[in-house]
Image (cartoon, rainbow over all chains, first blue to last red; front, side, top):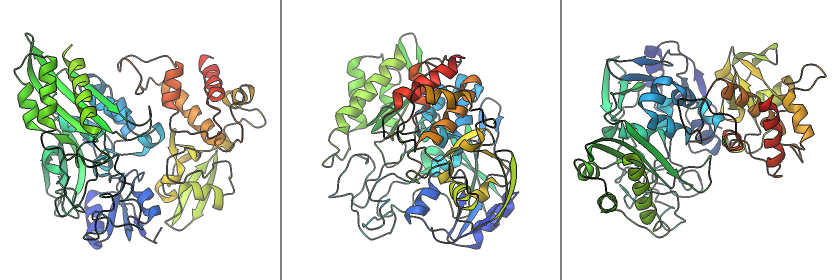
Length: 325
Length: 166
């Protein structure tokens, strides 16, 4: 690791000030991704601002939802009785991610901001537009497996690795952000991430000193919630394809549908056209097949990733079947 | 960077480089060689310790981030000469071959049993609102963060099952 300074502020003002002090500063939450990337030389911040003692470690009740503090651990979020009962898809997604040890460290905000597990991003000896803008993409022409087929560009095919964010995408989560001037704003998770285009190193719409203080979940719009994850081993692996479904049924029809996907997109993927197709329709195998066609209409099936098309179809069908039974 | 930790009941003061991970602080600065550096990237679990009651990968965290916390390593599991129930069960079931992953397995399993007693769910728990008994499937899922390259999983699971049933 390159040498760095370390600050552990007790208030958000000081944290934002610290971040503003250097263009190469980074916030550190759980550190499970950042420290790994620093060991690999992929990231080399000259200042770490530890956000763990800013008081953002609780889950607060809102009118009819909750605000999850930025440093609430993934394990505590999955375990929270409110989340287990009203937003079980989020508990399920969290429990499907990483290992118990990692979930005990990983934070809510850190999970949203974790970097791709594209092996070429993690290898500093090969070109990567995300790691070193303009250097090229070793994944294209390399071996593709945990890469994206939706939202990609000729500059980057890296998939977003989160499970948690997929469930949050289906739950219409809002990210709460404090800017360098102390102003608070919220941003829908559907607007939070950027597709890579020709700037894959810019992954979100956050400004440099912005501090995520929490994530708000509105009341769930569906009580049928399912998360399914398919991967190369039964536990402790990133998704090849995952899907979160939040649905409501009324008199045999789908009254509400919000479906989000992991392992497919450059960001936690949600397609309004899929939700619209399902809403108001009667559940059927043909409908679920059509939903897969709509989801994958612009999929880029690069060599090595062809398997994701039938797999995504099957995962979507399984999730929709389970949610509408 | 001045850092105070309580390790296995003993308070220690360190003045270390910011880059020192909790694992390196234990091994290189405090002479506690029980916690092992397997992969050093959070993939194998050999470095698992219990920080403020929670099992974590000590390789993926900085010692300075744990200032003021209580750490339990494998050296702190026995009561004097008396092995903990899990340590005894690992011996009884041959839950090891080379032994390199064992300190991490023991710390992880010790904390895992507490998590299960507290009613925490896992990926394979059927009903999130009802605490699940520790079946084999529950144990293997909850222990998936600890790899054993000798493949002693059957002995490890049997040892944990025995203690869970007590």
